[in-house]
Image 1 (cartoon, rainbow, N blue to C red):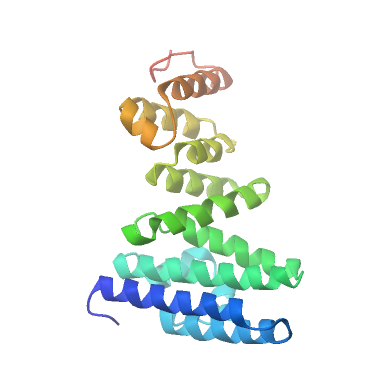
Image 2 (image 1 turned 45 degrees about the vertical axis):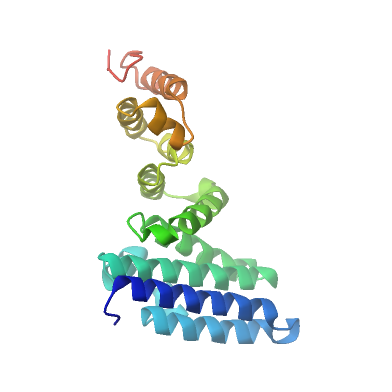
Amino acid sequence: MYRYESDYIMRMIHLLRLLYEHLLGITDSDRLRNGEDAIRETMGKLTGLTPDAAMSLDVEQLCEMLGDDGEGMLRRFALAELLRMQGELYESFAFVEDAEPLLRKSLLLYLSTAKTATELKESTVLHAQKLYRRFFSVLKEKEHLQAGQFFEEMACYADAEDAYCAMDDALFAAEFYRRLFALSPEELARGGFTYEETQDGFMRITRILGIGEGEDGSFG
């Protein structure tokens, strides 16, 4: 497709910016039809998919199709962005039932891109945080796990804590706190967390599990 990953990044960012500016600039009377057309065209160029095809496949199938190498991660990001844009376009017309599936799938695609290019991480995290909070109450166990793993990988420890603690299996949260105990105070601070929060969370989870109240990540 492109010889170098950086070429693909720049091409993708350029097309997404053009699309965003286009969606902002078109009039209300034409915005839905023209917006759909522009999203479909850009999606085809960046991923080889149509919106209907993307929505007919589950996230696991999409990830396998798009690949898990550097370029594959970029394609996942591009698809997440485009589905989010289409969802927000529908939402602006109060087509909530049409918007929700698009936005939820875009969230799951964002969560699959923890190893995407550094240039895109800030945007990925911001959209993932917003969408995760929106769909928090309706996500499945495995989707909370995926969110926890994503936010932990991105060093967003408060969001990771929310995700792991939302799971029925509290062992995932306990193991998360144990991993945080291995980090330095500086590393925790960069992730928006503290040793005291780690200690409090671990003690709370171990009480739930009934396995002791170790304060340093040990099970009593």
